[in-house]
Image (cartoon, rainbow, N blue to C red; front, side, top):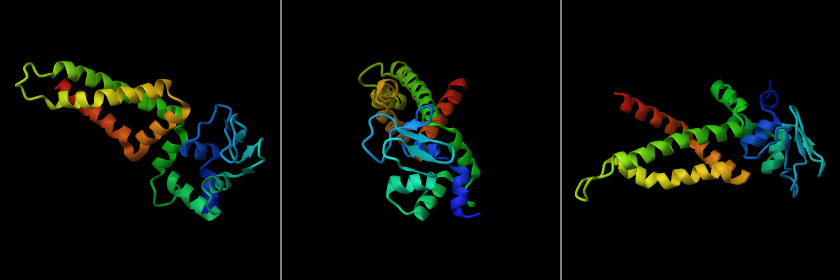
Length: 194
């Protein structure tokens, strides 16, 4: 099986569009990135995409090639690397990215950030110094530093524009930031239960 066949059998145009930061409606429509599109005119199907506005069409490799201005081979290689379809990459990554949509990622980030915000609010009260001479507890310091930033991120997820939400979620998913925060919250719970 060639890299082209492997990528096309694993990655759909919708998966690629969501992975590269586009907001896809439930019906598979998205604003076309290939022309000045204010209302979604591109349909992302299982095997191909088609824009009713500019007429752009093709498979997931052509979509990625056109989106990044690269050759078809470079696009296939990029998709293979980004979605873990190479034989030496773990298939778990492929499965996770295949089923996790932008909305799922937003919900995950919101849930984790909300839990972190509640923890910070608790720490700011519970571990505040009693007198000015007391050394501040590390948890109090973290709460003072992170409370406003965490609240801002939650506000973006709640009332921000689709682009703001996409950028924030993309940043949180990058380098496993959200996973690391989840692990930290798990450790905090375990410490409190001891």
